[in-house]
Length: 287
Ligand SMILES: Cc1cc2nc3c(=O)[nH]c(=O)nc-3n(C[C@H](O)[C@H](O)[C@H](O)COP(=O)(O)O)c2cc1C
Image (cartoon, rainbow, N blue to C red; front, side):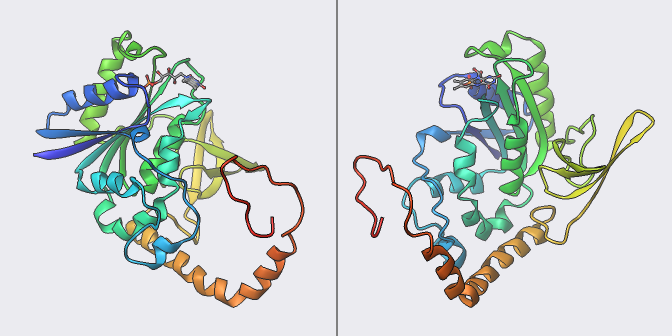
C-alpha cells in the first residue's frame, strides 16, 4: 500500500485545492492511503538565513512545525501539491516552507525523485500569473520528480467541478502520478521541462524553473529552445543537489577568509534611517 501526501496550499476548508487533491486520489488506481496537510494549520516561521542547518546534524534551529511537514513528505511515496492563485502567484504557504529548504538537503537521498503532481487553482481565466511556475519550483526544489502540473479555474469553493472537463483533468493528473508523466505540449526547456522564460536580450533566454540559459529561435513558425547546462547546477540530478549543498558549506570558509572585510562594509551602514518596529519588539542594540 502506497502513501500519497496531499499538500494543500489553500487555507480554505473544502475549497478547490482540497477537493481537487481528493478527486485526484480517487482516480489513482494504485492502492494507497491519502494523508493530507493544510500548510496554513502549521506554524512555519520564516527562514533566518543563519545556515546553521547546513553545518549541524539536527537540522533547523527554529522550534516550530517545519520538521513535522518534512517528516510527512519523507514518509510519503508520492505527493500531490496544490495552491490557489493569490495576486497572480501561488499563495505564500509553499514559499514559506520552501524558504527553509536548505534544511532539506540532508534528506536528499530520501527525497530525490519522489513522484509529484502539482495543481494550481485560479478564480479568473488567464489571471493565474506565475502560479504554475511557483508550484513547479516548489516540487523541483524539494527534489521531487514532476509528473504533471496543471492549472484549473474555479473561484467559489467547489466551483472547479462545475466544469465537468476538470474531472477529466483530475483523472489525467492522477494517471501521471505513478504512470507516464504528462508531456508539455508548448515550447519548454529541454533540460527541465519548464515553460516560463526571461528574455535576456538578442535571442538569449533563461529558464525560470532550472535557471539554465540558451537561445530561442524560430523554425518556420515554431519556437525552438536550445538551453545549455550551466557550470553551477542546482537540481537537474541528485549529484547537482549534493554539489550545491557542498558549495554552500564551502561558503563558510569563504566567509571566514573575508570576515573582516565584510564586517567593515556592513558596519559602515550601522547608522541611518529610522526603524519602525512591531509594538511588542525590544529595541535592537545600536539601532
Ligand atoms: C486574496 C485572494 C487573491 C486572489 N487573487 C487571484 C488572482 O490574482 N487571480 C485569480 O485568478 N484568482 C485569484 N483569487 C481567487 C482564487 O484563486 C480562487 O478563489 C481559488 O478557487 C481559491 O482556491 P481554494 O478554493 O482552494 O481556496 C484570489 C483569491 C483570494 C482570496
